[in-house]
Amino acid sequence: MTRPIFYKVDPSDVRHQRNSYAAAFAHISRKYENNLEKVQRWRTALTEAANLKGATLNEAEYVYF
Image (tube, rainbow, N blue to C red; front, side, top):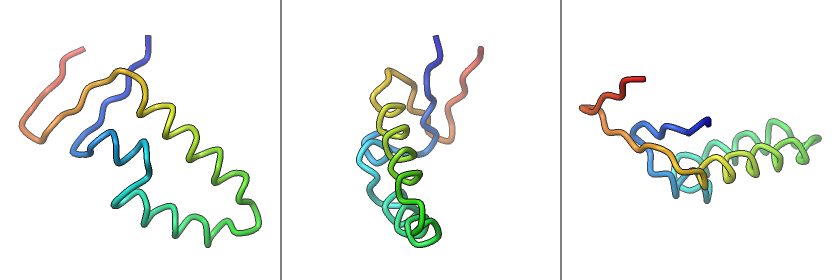
C-alpha cells in the first residue's frame, strides 16, 4: 500500500490548499488560466493524498523502509 509522507508540512494545509499551497495554486491558476480543469485535478489529487493515512515528519525524524 502506498502512503504519503508529509515532510515539514501539515497535511491539513495540503488537504485544504492553505498557506504555501494557497500561494502556489494562485500562481499555478494564473499560469494555467486556459486550463483550469487541470489545476482542479491537481487540487483534487492533493486532497485525496492528504486524506490517506500517512506519516508526518519533522526535520529531526527519520523513516526507514
